[in-house]
Length: 327
Image (tube, rainbow, N blue to C red):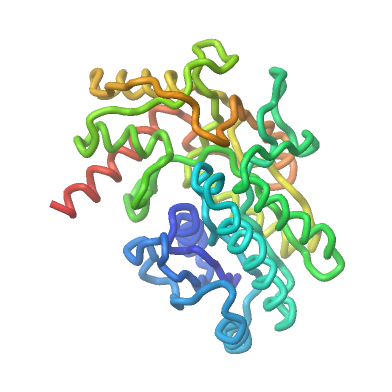
């Protein structure tokens, strides 16, 4: 399999590239390095520094190499920023993605795996798991920008064969520490927690303790990034074998509150995590827990790292590695 992969210098994209390469596939990464890091690009992947809206450059790439499919990860992902700068998110996550898809189509590349988000569901008031038929209720422009891109694919299903993957909360790092999360402004709980453990931060700020949850803090379904990466490899095989468009949730089906995560970390690292409560952030939702029964029926994927402490530990080990390299 030969994959054109956008956002491969980013967190999830680099892990997906590793999963593909580890299984003998070819990967050509497109990334403009605006938020990604060149050190995350796997050494045996091809790389082109390029914006996803650069029609000429991408057309020439497709013409010069026979790609089987596009995996599209590139995009802005910070919920709070999207509330403050919605136009930035709609321009890049929607308009530029659509331009990329059309560029691919015009050059004969019609198979797409699209990186979307469970934030599309918004808050779910009952205790049921979220499946792919749950009503969409986006509560921030980031989620809306992804939904609009999904909608484009469904409206143009005669032109594309595609898989949409809605991620729940992605965390952890490659077990060999070849990749992990690097960001100029960390917003992910387990990333921030890891920075506290290694001494880069003094404490964690918990945004909201007045949610309608058992301990008042928001609940999320955390999936290890390497398990998510393996989903992409399996789903690419599924798409090429079946040429059937589909939509899947990506999560474990387990919900942990912010305090659950902190308590798990303190269990490992002997109460190093100090926290304080602050008001809710704009755009945050109360609870997101997936039903993954659909994807388990369609592909041969079994989670390897479905353990909260293991997710936290791999994230901390990565943080220790990059912290040491910066000192």
